[in-house]
Length: 112
Image 1 (cartoon, rainbow, N blue to C red):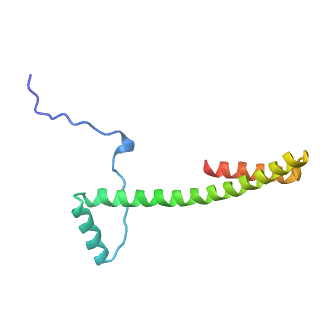
Image 2: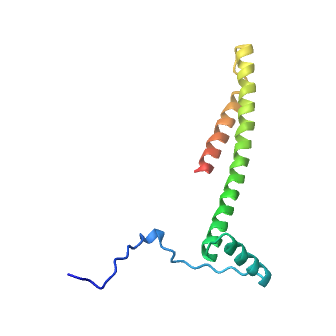
């Protein structure tokens, strides 16, 4: 039994490149982008997707660095309170600790 149909595997719907985006650039930018894609042997579409997705990751990393900085400041404050509590035997500024706790919960929610 011979079939003239070729077997072609179809990608799952979420993996199909079915959405088109339009981006306006100058003629020189177009030439530059297409040349860069050609130099690394990528199709322009693949190159553009790679660049756009990579940049979004950089933006996310920068926002996470800000959150990390805020968490570090909160940690430093908590360590100072713990040091005072260990030295004096009392827990100073109970309200500050509760405020730090709320700040940490808020930041963790932002992280998703």
